[in-house]
Picture 1: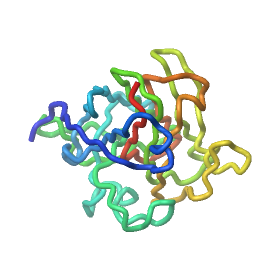
Picture 2: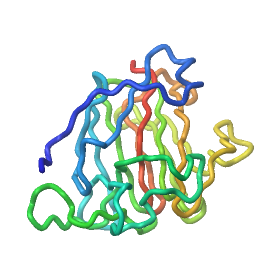
Picture 3: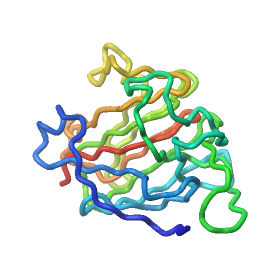
Picture 4: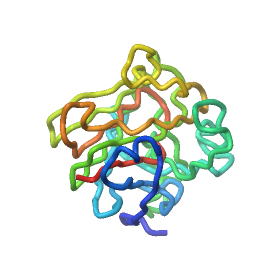
Length: 229
């Protein structure tokens, strides 16, 4: 098994309503070329290189790793297919997920964590995506976010080190929010697709860094990037 950066180019049409209003095609990041427990530092989508990093304030390590949701008898059954609730059907195959590693045990030093498990402390930390070229929108799937009070996560958008704004998970289920999505349902073993959030919503043309702050345990799956700049 190799632990080097994996690259691939996939063009897809997801979130059809958002794609229809976007001048550029949609790019997709997925982690299907990675193995269960593999440490992830970057990936390429289209012509855009993406550096991926994790911050875990609860441990001495900061690792973004892959979790294969199609496996059974893993260290975290809550991230195993099928799903219990959310706006994605129970039988939606999400495949490889990205998590903040709770442990860094790599017995044979091959770049794979032996028993992948997501950080269960609150807050769990963050996953950051740094894009070589600015993008105009960002959407993703979020798995096993159990509750808004205990796991009050958010998505922060930045240009370099400058924060352009943040959207909390709570806003996605708040009827008074501009980003309210009545289809989203958080809960144990939930799987939700968050529609792409545009740079124009933040009052800017683009951003080149996105940070997903995880209030508790959970995983991020497919990342939909609309409108390369």
